[in-house]
Image (cartoon, rainbow, N blue to C red; front, top):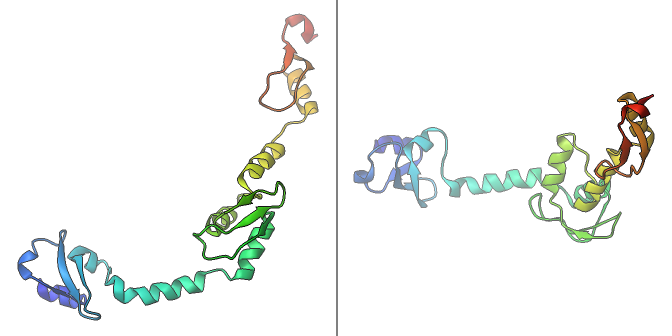
Length: 175
């Protein structure tokens, strides 16, 4: 089994530690010499030395990172004004809501994920909830038509979909 670890770029520190491919054993990377604990089954699947992979991972992160201008364009497109520097997609980006003036810190990763999923994104979270409510609100005329079609007379009181409003559902009013 020691040969198989060498094949994957690692050396068993103590061959007596190895029992099965599904248990971790102490190893040393042949490339950089860093000691770690590895599962042979993970090495077989392509998991290598984290220390050797770190520069590659950092380069990938730099390529996929938004520029400051791109980050500002994204937050401005949803109604926010950047008030600080963009760090990365997972760090909150300091902004001010253009609608209510709140200081907020959305993560660019969350915003872009919602945009990629085809969702609408508006300013800060409270303003977004308000906007969704406004967009989904039913007009009083539509309510009257729906109630009349159901044989119910609309009296008054409709403001939003949640509050109760007065209707007369007696058979005499349906005529």
